[in-house]
Length: 367
Image (cartoon, rainbow, N blue to C red):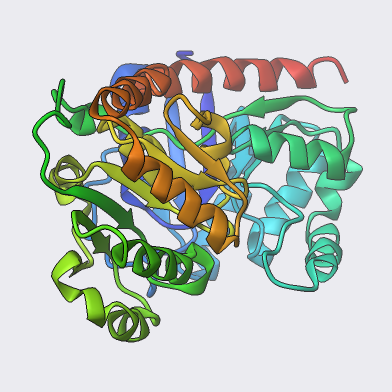
C-alpha cells in the first residue's frame, strides 16, 4: 500500500479510534490522515491520547476545512465517518462529482429507541442524499449496521463490516477456575448512567434479586444524570452496591478482573466496545438485541445472554440465570467468552482495513 493516500473524517479522537489509527500507521506504509471534527466532546471525560498519526483538528475552523477541500483530490480514498457538518457534506459532494474513490463508514441507521424514528430517516435522507444518489461503498460498524444500511440503501453497492477494534490484550484474563472459590457473585456495569444505557432497568432488576440473594454485588462504573436517583433506589442494598464513578480508560481492565458477570442492558448502542472488552476479560455478558457488538458476539447458552432491549423482566431472568449457574458452567461461559473474540484483535482490524481500502478503490475502476 506504499502509494495509497487515505483521508478519514471522524468525530473526536476517542481512545479507541486513536489506538487503531496509531496501530495502522505503525504496522504498514500507508499515508493516512485523520480529520477530527472536534478535539474533544463536552460529554466525555477521556484524557487526550497521543495522536501518533497525521491528523487535523477542525473545530469549526473554516480555513482548515477549505484547506482539506482544496487538497481532497490528492487522496486515493476518502472515508466519511461523519456527515453532520455542512463543510464535510461539501467535500462529500465534491468527491462524488470527481468520481474518485470514497465510502461511508457508520453505525446502524434508522433506529431511535424513542419515538419518531421516521423523522430521523427523513433527516438522514436529506443529509445523505449524495450517498443515496451514488454507488459508493458503505462500511458498516458491525453486522447489524450492514443489515440496516442494506435495508435503507439497497443491495446495489458494496458493503463491508468494519466495526471498532481496540487492543483487547490488556483485558485478557489468566483466570482459569476463577469461580471455584467465590463467596460473592459480582455484576459489573460500565457506561454512562443515563436512560439510553438501560441502567435504570439494571437497578430495578438488581433490587429484586438482592431481596432473594445476599451473596451478589453490583459495581457501577460511570457518571450520568441518573446517578442520584439510582443511589436512592439502591440505598436499601448499599452494602451490595458500589458506585465508583468515571474511571480512566487505562484503568478499566482492573475493574473487569474484579467482576464475574458483565451487564450492558442498553436500549440502543450502535456498537458498544465494552462488550468485547468484557468478553476478553473472561466475563459472560448480558447484552441486548439493540446493541451492535452484543448481536455480533453473544450467543445464548455459550458466552452470555442476549435479551430484549428495554425489558426489565428479561434482564432479571438473565441475571437470575447467571446466579444459579454452577461454578463449572460459569467457568465454561468464561472460557467461551474469551474464545468468542479471538478474531477481534488490532491485527484483525488492520487486516480488514487494508483489504477494504484496496477493494473500495478497485470498486471505482468498474464505473
